[in-house]
Image (cartoon, rainbow, N blue to C red; front, side, top):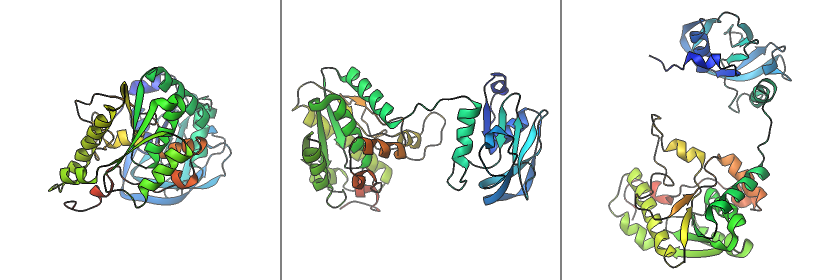
Length: 340
């Protein structure tokens, strides 16, 4: 039985947009008909839009879109009209304008649908009446205030990996608490070439931030001895990171908070409730139960592209902000088998 949603959603009086399977749900729950085509449709195709539909405001009648489906709508629900079609798919979009319920078979959220973002904007701003209040500056201002209110007279240490996420998190927290922040950079011997030099330059020279450089290569390698499973490596490194931080924190008075560069994608990947577990992220699953410090995760609600925008606004160089992703546990999980 495919997953369903409550039919009561459609009685809330709010606009609804169903994408791909979401369109199938709308059709099924409201009395339309879904038919199995017997073959998959996957890839780019030309789609025809009804331009009198507010969802497609500002678009051309013919656009390129991305399809990824097997079943399709063969009869829309009562009071719905067809608003999009392709050469092989007569019903690629449906609309109930009175109830502001829309369904589209294609995927507007992917880059392969060039006008996809315009469609989503039309739904949010023209149909739902939302206002565009999210800006990089507002995110920084809100986070700075929240961090100040949280930390107060306490001190903070920040877990630095040298990557974009922890770097942006550190600079953001520094903007909020200044000299109350001490950044701890742990060199576990599995970093990118020249990582330690770049971290020293960015934090000590450019931003004048308190930086403790811990050279712990032997310590980490001893903990990883004989370990083959990459998931176990992640958790070992995550736990050892925290142990190092706690040891360093004892040298600083009144350290109550630990900053991590956890992103929203990290939280998703770690699995929540009934979601399928993809992998445990070292920023999330590696935390020991007896950790004495409280977490500050200023980027937890953001995705990578948003974090890069924050980094630029905070004054980080393009070289740092645009660098390729590198796992926090470093080469340990890129090396197959035991790390020696």
